[in-house]
Length: 358
Image (tube, rainbow, N blue to C red; front, side):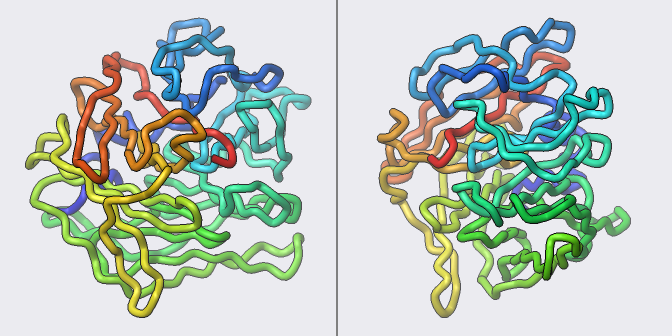
């Protein structure tokens, strides 16, 4: 059966409501640093709370802590796999509070960007940067999980964020009208964006070109012929991410239709040599993969942040029962539930903030 892609109608009703509202979440204070040890799993407070503080689970410390809001409640934020948080001004922001920037949640430093308002960007969006180190020319890509549209700008170069539509084909399901496919699994390696589709024998590429800052960049889609990776029958949670300049694919299969408990962990590294192929691996060295809701996927040093090496930390935000935090071992196939978070009606599932330049 196809992998568990939240762009499919099968999960759109339940999971887009639970999985994709990343932009409504972060409130960790631009005027104060976060002292808790990263990576952090942030627990969304109840809607009727004063939001004067947030509960976060520090992965290195293995404990819950209270932290102040990161941004104003009148702003919208999107975490990135590179650790920076994209902060957008909301329609209710004052003039002095308006603007768009990247925020380092650890030290409060910011990098200004062209203005992009929250009324332009749906709640079903994610943000990915083209490079781990944010420098002039680094690309910022915001893409919608629910429709084929994206926004793009380059740090220190573009005068405005450009909006782009795209066409990567249609999703055909028996008995349903064709619907446009959209980006869901996107990662960046060495400044270039790649997107993964489980049902095709290729790896998609996305590049932007412009002659100067006043010109709207041209979005160019391409494809690299790559044999598809077979998945077992049933549902499979899929993630793509960059780690140490390599592109990885992670599959977490479940028993049939039940998404409460994973069966195993499968990790593949993209081999770009001729011919390109996904190579299964049981070793990512002194690294830990951090996986969570809305197919968020990041990598960080294990020893540098007090984590287990050669492991995947994964929050099962698909289950209706609980949002369990698992640690999955690549080499020994071990599986352990580190922490269990109750699903509360009206409260978003936990989401990750990872260290910058990890």
